[in-house]
Image (cartoon, rainbow, N blue to C red):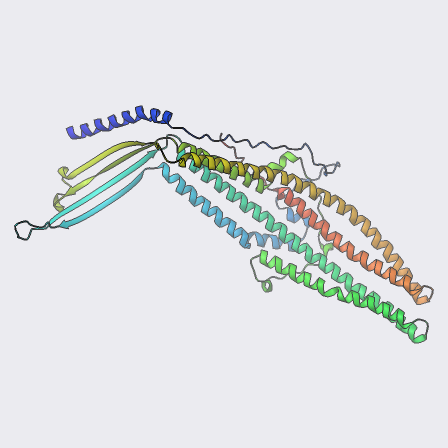
Length: 480
């Protein structure tokens, strides 16, 4: 008992000495400081390109359903499950979760157990063979670093922020994947429209070619007129293979987004007439900061770098550790657990770097620099988000306007073509006029199909720029 009391007194004396000397060591140590974190960004009161009309409904979380295409919805839902980029992002989240466990381990005591059995024989000085001696032991040791300055706690918080960033990155990848599926699907629909237009125009040009051939036989037209019309027919036929290739390539792109070979993916399509263009409300710019996962990821990364800087700053202060060991040891296995076989030791220590060549200071400065890098990246992500929304709003508005104008062009071109074709059969119009009306109509119809595609893809871009209806689950607040 006296021995135990003596050990306790020694331990208290060590702890008191540490409490007295630690502040002195801290004062003597010159410490690099952590830069304060300022995440304020300039936010405009409204979007320049936003409509001044009555606002539409807010962006749906499942915004792809607003296009009213069951096939598109099915493809998107499949991509959300099977996309390989999303799978990679999920693996990164799992890795970040494991890193939290590793970072948090430093906040708990480290306990190790040891069991030993040893037999040894020493050399004899008189030439006789000495007897072997056995030793048995069981012991446990524990060590614990008191996180007085918060070094390990800040490292754990940084790991948690990295986990949040990984989760937001996964959401960003999912949003990008959905937009890619929608764009490729609309590309298929538009190519099918253009393909149908090209085939119809080939048939129309073929009808006029038949009329000219009949007129050539009757001697009322020339072989030059027939050759010119034949050239127009051939042009329309030549436009078909690239459109068929576009359909194949877009189907292959969707197959890749689904994580499957193209042969295992069947897409029917049906033209842009099978989808509905939704009306999207942009909202106010301040809402964008919580509606885009890439902004949330940049913010989480910034907070993580700030916490790393705080951890590096705390590493400059003394490290206070407690260690203890206890167990039993005996030369005979049967007496291993006798009271006399027991032993223990406890100790406390303070370690303060005095000269390290600037390693700790440079670690803080490096962390500060990384924080500046991530701060610039965060601010850029916010500005880029505003630019994306403005561009998408302008594209939707202008393409909607162009769509109406192009529809009028097609209508008037169709009327002119019908009149010229009728007059050609009657023999009251020259071939040049017929060729001009044909080419104008064919070009106008093809342009209309392309404008429809561009408008649909602009709506996808607007949904993506607005975060696709995504909202951060909980705001992150940095600690200065």
